[in-house]
Image (cartoon, rainbow, N blue to C red; front, side, top):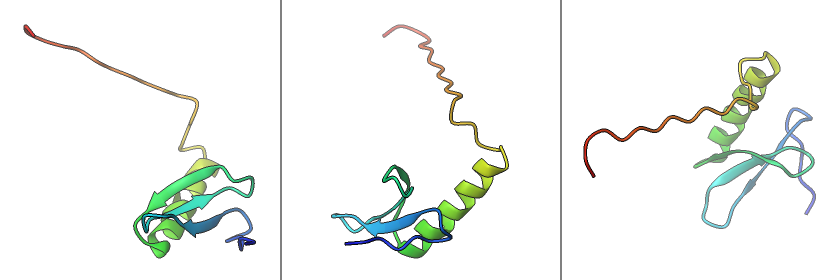
Length: 70
């Protein structure tokens, strides 16, 4: 089944459990949502923020501390 591109940059599909997931044209997943409308809206927002440089996927930060006795 051929997917219809939205805004010429992503497509959405319903997954097995009823959730919706957006994908880049190459098939790489972007966003998972409960409804199709929310998936399209969230993906548009995410891609806009990424384009504007507000999202840097190369930065990974972890912090973990354990205080007290285990």
